[in-house]
Length: 165
Image (cartoon, rainbow, N blue to C red; front, side):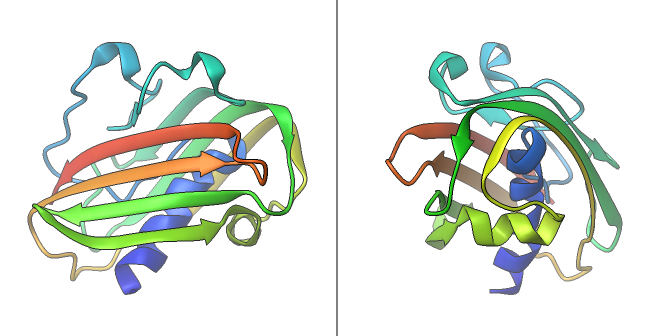
């Protein structure tokens, strides 16, 4: 659960003002340049983002790549083309190697409060968030998927990353 509380604010920091979920570190690779999220980060869109209601301008992680035991700064900028209201949610999946360690649905509006935002969210947003990464992140390959929806199940965005600590 500590891993969830570490990773979720990082990903949500990007959703609140742009894009980003970052607890990433080590060997980071963007597998498809066409789906790459702009900025200094290992994020990719899950598919073409033409129909997403969050247009992400950039997400920058400092340091990039993140490392255990350091302070990670996430700066993100984006534009919500549709109002995000109470009831929006994130389908979050995190795998450690081939083992799924987190598979949950999280209230997006409740998590936005962690980055000093609240629903409804609309229009251009820029956020900066710092997160202390624990020293105890087990070494290995992590795969993170965050699929974000409105209360009416319309896609806000979908982001994924592979990170090796």
